[in-house]
Length: 474
Image 1: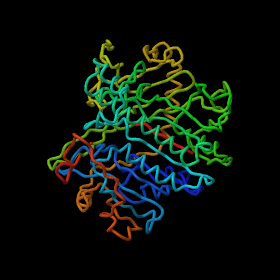
Image 2: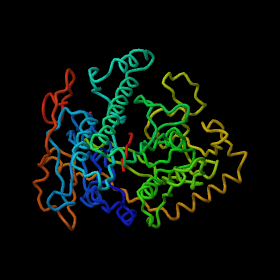
Image 3: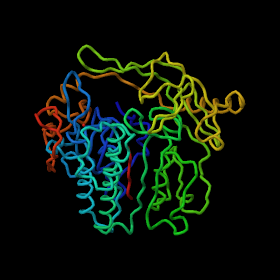
Image 4: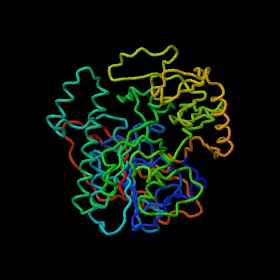
């Protein structure tokens, strides 16, 4: 139901600057009560959806609950009454492609911002998350982009729709960075571009030559590209590559350091890389990191009333750890390699080709790789180096002793009755500090409606209604 409050509350973002804003994309850190919403987590502004994905044009959740579809788009900002324990649903944007929608929101924020004041803008685009249909219209593409799509005759429908989504991401980032110049922010803005995970082959995403895909612990599912851009980077490092080991948790202290914060929070997992990023041929301050530990196997169960419940089974921990050049995977499913042509021979027993949890009876095993000599994880050397594997297993045991136990809860049918009031996915549990004005469940922000030519998809409530990469600017 959400990332537990006590695990990160002491170091989560607080408004030490005049504006700390998260304008777009999925929140996906919990929304069953207001304490888990972005406003209560330190953000002055939020505009986006609360679940894992929505349809790009209708902004409805792709799946149904008890046979009913729901929209998912809400807004929070510090000007609201009773903020942060308040929000409004956004119900007049049907037909606006999410990339364009959230660039419009970013434009509103940037145009009103005083360039002399600090600003943290977290812009997490939906592209290239599925669902991809209906796809962006061809009229939105340049002749060159359409030519690229037409010439790729071996790509299937999923791959072409994925490519269209990626092209729209290119447009979105171009337009966003142009705003920095338009509003006088470019000369004092640090832009960080990154992703959250690898692609899913069944939806047209590929991570070749890296092995694996989203949801799995091979490099193809967890290693992503990124870049840092801004005039505060020394000339000698501009255009260079940083080969150092870096974990996503490192961004917070690195950003704070770049902003001149010297008193970094204690007790965090992240490590400051700013000195290394701004020094030629610097070594990474990080020498190891934990990829994940998951002591449960989850099974999705479809109930008679149409709802979906998740059943958890305690199993041997599925985990991965890197120490120096070495990477250990415990109880991981054998996942192969995927490229757009799908002409690769897969290792025996590595038939898992979907970004979904395999059956609990599917075999899993342990792997050990040297990522320097074997960056594509082709040769499992766990039998050749048992001592290294054992030491790393003990490290994982140590991590497990300190990890916060997940307090997972199953489906709460009360949510559906609350969502039915407005047709939107929203918080549904009232806590000790209730919302003062429940009418916000039916409120809306200023609309940005636009006609989408030639393609439509029925939305949840009206006929003819219209289905990850992240960018941060400091």
